[in-house]
Image (tube, rainbow, N blue to C red):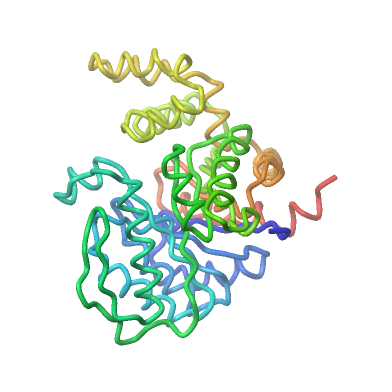
Length: 341
């Protein structure tokens, strides 16, 4: 894929979904090509895209819809709904999520995630094509489902992946892969696994789009903002799937003091033990120019589309909104492309 795309991760914190129509219109004028949603403990991943899709001609994507928390048929219906709002502009990103989301919050069982994602992708290919689907996979079966309002145009399926097992699934069955929580220098290893798996499956490796959500904190460096970033990193990297991913990436030695303190129950020591190198590797920070340069490093490393997940630890609501809108404008793709040496 030759064109490099700058996207926004939506929704932006502190803004209602209705307000995202105007935000998206401005973002499109500024050169952002896509809006990719997230889903954790706020709104669902489909609703923001319906708003953006009605207001703009941007490409839309879920990053991601969880394959455990919605049944296969329900997932197909959700995808078909957004595709009807934005025909030919919607990508369905699916993923397994994490143990807390699946088990603690949704009463599911986080078991055989790579197989579950592969089964779901294969079912969705048929369901979204309007077939009457009788499907028996390794993790679920569907008997006789057919969409009564199938999409008018095909929906690409993207797979969120961390470690090799899921990266191989992305290469085998995905139109794209969604990466997360990695540094620019980590990109090549992840891409290699995806491309090799695609080639083994008889697919064109270059046709698999490489996307990534970049964690961008727009606060100036200060003791307070540094502490907040450390807390954020600590919270995420003690979730088993993210811990295992960082181990695969080679950060086990650097992060073991943090993990050890967390296991012992000393949360304050765990936060303090996050190395500066890990913070600078995984969280995009600095001046707007420095953030823009860091984003370009990901693109140069092999990412085709970056989703900027903008965050601030500003607590005052009006100020928070100003900071985030200012960052959307300051990081506009056209501005940074034009200023590149």
